[in-house]
Image (cartoon, rainbow, N blue to C red; front, side, top):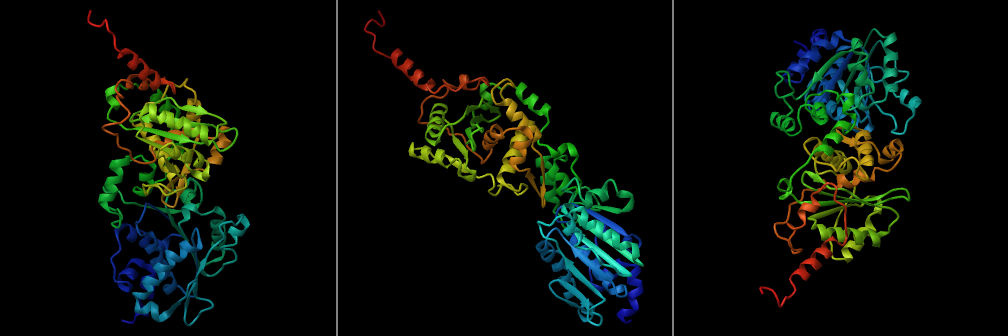
Length: 498
């Protein structure tokens, strides 16, 4: 039978179109979307990571182009590059697999059109500048009208509402119109969030996920990977909710910690043997401006000691303070914030003193792919440490109020599928000061550290009970006095034994 005789059937049954034109078998969740497409004006796909939603968008677009007379389709994504690299690539790939589509349609970098009707039968790629204001965003889809019209909003989780408003306006004058949006649930605002919450009655919403226990799960998501994420981070972790279950994280998850987490950490108490085998790590945040503080925060395993806080000191003084603390405490590693070059002088002076500090740039890549940058990674690692049993100094300790404010009022969101903290300047504006104390403690999680079995600095066991007291205050002469006392006690006594 001639393929064109199937047009009416494919129009009513897009799942049959996919099987017969592309020779593939849709998954369960894909069949649900395909079956609903002819009957639903608005479809929203809320998806976890890597499920293949863009592939389905391409199938729907080709079905609409082939089975409606003189249709117009506009596709938009969060950026022109995103649209080109994802949806447009999928459109090209599926066209190449169908002799029928190659015969009927021409494809360019920004337009697909019927060879016989290039002016009235087409699909176009639309975009808006990253710096566009609301008016410019709304113009992306404005003025587009046809009897058969379709809009595809790819990665709509991060798309401005103004784009959706233009698409909605075009549905008022058509015979048949559709809006298809798909994205990850990474923003608690925008078109996808509204479709899944306040405007749900207007949308046919489909959740697509990699939940290993869901029979309708997307097979593209590795079951092993999904189970590993759940095991490592827990089912309620925001990264797992978004990237495995395809769910929006609750609004309460938009901050790293609650006050109760901090209070519980301050009330904990560990004994010496609980931390003996753990490495000793110093996190050092260097002041950037006159009202900021330079903070040295020591941590050994589950125990965070009292921080050392200094103001208005230069790199020579700061390097000297860190070196003395390094020696007296026997630190296994020292991490210094090198973002923007503010810590460079401290690092250089420590190297002149024979030390090997490790600079950490907050904007550098994270070691764990679930985070957008190093700053996000170390803050989440610190928050997890607090939740899972970390001990903080008493709340009355200098610097604890600043730490509490930063850890309970710093918010996060998603960039793509990665967790990212709000900019530091926004945190400072909200709490009234730079989060230097939180930066210093979080720096102790910059990289994995192993404790040294033997040290050339002498017997640390004799110093540990004092160091492990959460109320411990740094005394640069502590070790010097201990050595002097031991030396006096070992001096020759001619009357000894008499």
